[in-house]
Length: 312
Ligand code: MEV
Image (cartoon, protein in one colour):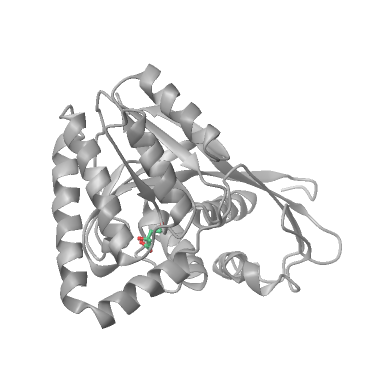
C-alpha cells in the first residue's frame, strides 16, 4: 500500500417500520435499510496526528468532543482490532443522513468508518466483527441499544429483529408507498429510551400492556408485508403511534404531521425511531396519494420528505 492511498467505506440509513422501543424489552421489531440517505468515510494518511473532518467537527481525534464519543470509540476500537492504534490518518465523513432523526445516523457513520478503516488496511471484515465494533459505539451513544440499527445497516436487508435472537430476513413486497418525513426536530433516542424505562417503573401494568399491543401489531405487519393487505399495515402504524404516544416518546409536531398524513388519505402513520422529535412515516396506497401526503407534510413544516415504493 502506498502512502497516498485513499480508501472509503459506505453505509445506508434505516427506517423502523414498527416495534421501536418495545424492541429494547425483547419484543420483535421490523426495520428496512433506507438507501435514500447514507454516509461515506474517506481515509488517507496524515503526516503528524490522526484528524477527523465532518460537518460537526474538524480537529484531532484525541480532542473529539464528548458528543462524538461514540464515534471516537468506533475509531479507536477499530484501529485496535487492526493492531493500528498508533496510525496517523485523516478521516473525512460525508453524510446525507439527518443527525438524530431516527434514521440511524450514528450506527451508519460508525459502520462507514469501520468499513473504511478495514478497507484501508486491506483486511477482511467479518460481519460479527463489524457488529461487535458498531454495537460498542452504539452503547456509548444510546446507553442501552437493542442493536436493531446496527443489524439493519450492517446487513442492508429488511429484518424482523429481536434482541438475543438470530435476525430473520424479510422480503418486503407490498403494493403501497412509504412516505418518510423529517420534522426537523432533533430526536433524543437515549432520553426517549430513559423515558420509557421511567414509564415502566411508574406504570408497570400499562407498560406491559402497551408492549404486548406493540408486539401483536409487529406480528400482524410481518404477515402482511409480503404481498398482503396494506390497509392492515397502515392501521397497525397508527395504532402503534398511539402506543408510543402513551409511552411518552412522541412530540406535538410529530403528532401534527401524523394527523396531517391521515387527513390526506394515508392508510396510517406513526413516528419512527427513538421519537421525541425526529422522523415520521406514513403509508399510501398509490404514488399520487403519496405525493399529495408528502406535499401536505412539507406545507405543515416537514423539512424533507422521501417516497419509497414497498413493491419488490
Ligand atoms: C432506535 O432507532 C430504536 C429504539 O428502539 C432504541 C433501540 O432499539 O435501541 C428506540
